[in-house]
Length: 267
Image (cartoon, rainbow, N blue to C red; front, side, top):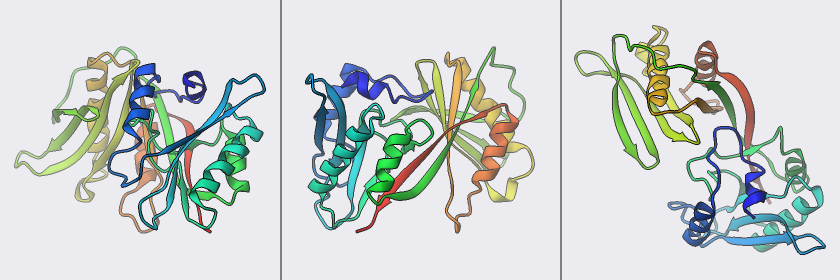
């Protein structure tokens, strides 16, 4: 099963180890999701080898069921069998969310299905009545020989434990918060920019770019050789501007990568 899950690992995501796999199975899924212990269905080929796995969970109320993870080496038949098994167990008349949160084997990873490289799974979800719910854009850049000298104003950097990483804040001299960012500690020498935002009153002044430069420096100082950013498309009524975040990243040599989708199905 380890090789099955690793086959779908994206650049910038940590490798799945026997320890993390075992811990995820024993933990019973995502804390805070108010779900019952997830169930796992495994598909085997004619030789008895594991060909696919789906993990799903039914909430203790009438809330939507959850398909938490699905891996099948992009075999259309295996994906179909696994989705059918999950929907049969969850109930075909119940609303179901698919891949809407971080995978149980890698809770620090982004949610969603990499639709560019997992076309078979995407096609099976479409055929089963699922539609796209949210979309994430991934961007990636090497860090090269960073860090360079920090320039004023210098952001404050606070360590984070869960998940490991740093929170950076850029403030005025009077202590007013101007912009902030969150970076996950490097895994396999790959750091992840989880979030960066500038207060609306201080945008278009280059402060976001200045803070992003310091995010790159902090990651490089701690031996990261590359950084991945995941930007979720915002809802129509949101005050956040995902387009501005993408433009900021591309201005600092981040390059577009995979698009990730989460899905929902209404009965």
